[in-house]
Amino acid sequence: MTRLQKSILEVVKRSEAHLSVKEIYALVQSDFPTVAMGTIYRNLNQFAEDRLIRRVSGLGSADLFEGNLAIHNHSQCLSCGKVTDVHILGLKEFIQEQIGDETVSLDLLVNVICSDCMKKDSNFLKGTKDGK
Ligand SMILES: [Zn+2]
Ligand SMILES: [Zn+2]
Image 1 (spheres, rainbow, N blue to C red):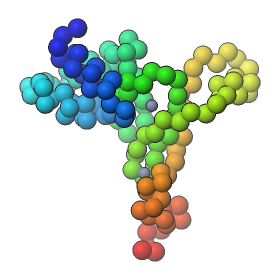
Image 2 (image 1 turned 90 degrees about the vertical axis):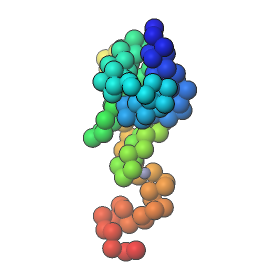
Image 3 (image 1 turned 30 degrees about the horizontal axis):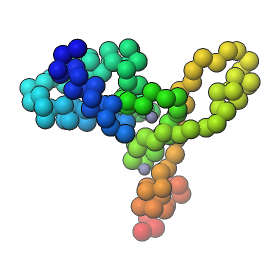
Image 4 (image 1 turned 135 degrees about the horizontal axis):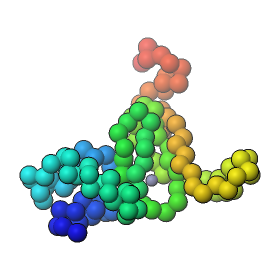
């Protein structure tokens, strides 16, 4: 593994967040100013394929990458796009029961309005922005 590849992997592993390619690019750039976005993207894809990191496919947003490989699912705020880890006990067993077939893995994305956005705009769910 090259120094650049190590650096890309480090950035994702060290972060508690779910990072977009652009965010990872910005972080890696501080050590490798001349690195190309395509190089970052190619390496992230390879790392995800090798299961060194996890790719989270968002709804309507670009793919995100995270270093947390423990089994968990995600919620995404429809307003700000923030992605949060969610842990639902017994979810896999529940789904397997419903489906009947052997459930190997699942990738659940729950759409939410996060508490920050609810505070910012309490009218969000009413579909009106007039009541300010
Ligand atoms: Zn939000
Ligand atoms: Zn996650």
